Length: 241
Image (cartoon, rainbow, N blue to C red; front, side, top):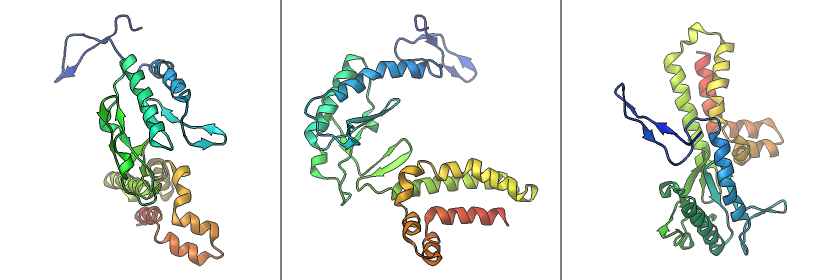
């Protein structure tokens, strides 16, 4: 499959000469994800086998890292443990000629004040410094230093509005039934607005009120101020215009 792999560049309806592909997997090939998982598996094993790490413990399991395809999160409870994980990654990448995109690589030291602490500086991948940040987008969800998902929810709300405006520009509500319009919303807007909701939904005021409310009045008041709920109401008003 890879003994004579080549590619061409198409530009202005013209094709370049064949270019030999000597590294990496073929883009879009069904086998590529499986081959990459086999290739990257040893890194996961090596990270788990590092001695003397202080890492989060969940249900009795030590969680030193999260690996989703080529997105890697290293988790540690102290600076020394995190640097050991970074050193392991650096050695593995150098050995197997992997490149780490430092433009998308950052450090977050979680704290209630949501400030970048001094201890967030000084981490290195090989000889290169890793910059600390206040928030980071991982698998489409904005993560903040204080553990809040407010930025994530606001980001999803904006994406849902963009999807809504896109439909609004192209759809004539007079030509479709209300049932059809609701199906469009459920198919094209709802998945955007609720992306990753098992992670952040319980942190919203509307869910906190729902869990503790004794009557309907407090819940009604809270829902009227909820960002996603007001966006939902705006979409429903448009459908019923």
